[in-house]
Image 1 (cartoon, each protein chain N blue to C red):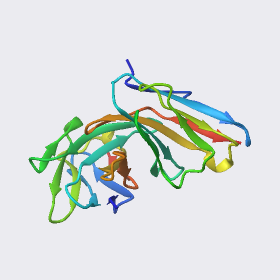
Image 2 (cartoon, one colour; image 1 turned 90 degrees about the vertical axis):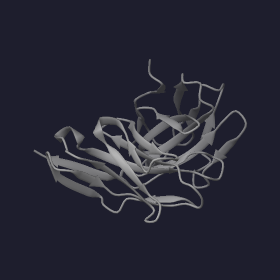
Image 3 (cartoon, each protein chain N blue to C red; image 1 turned 90 degrees about the horizontal axis):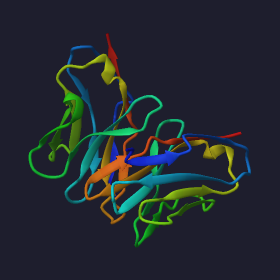
Length: 114
Length: 110
């Protein structure tokens, strides 16, 4: 069975500093990995995905993620955090049994401190 | 145009009632989904559906039933609502590796 883990419930970072939100995955075979962001009382917004190819994936709003097969990780990063990046971030992996749905991690709340 | 739209956005109802949440996508996607986000913000898949197959998460009570009148719609019907059904429900659609989510329906059972 596939799954993702987000080990940190909360990440605090000062504005202008680099940020990292961690995600590790467990799948058999090649994973399809995703990052979504949820702002308060809003839906899920797509940030980026890894399907194949370059391990460094660039996405929306200046975010990027690095796929690391040996460490089974897909950490989300941004070089310089903005206060407006404060939100709930979800890592997800696609189901490999045929249903094609996404399995989500438990989410990480990012707070960027001015 | 909203790609995946859900109605209503908010729904407050009494225990024991039956209610439906509608979802429509205008992306031409083959597959649609319903997710539940609980009070701890955990997101869990409830149903996956395309025009050939319905896949149900085994943990979903049979009081919940998806209904798809056509490829662009997947409505969620809930019978005999319980307090524990209070949550935010998200509809989504996908084609290939592209997934789009609706803005959610906040259901409150009182």
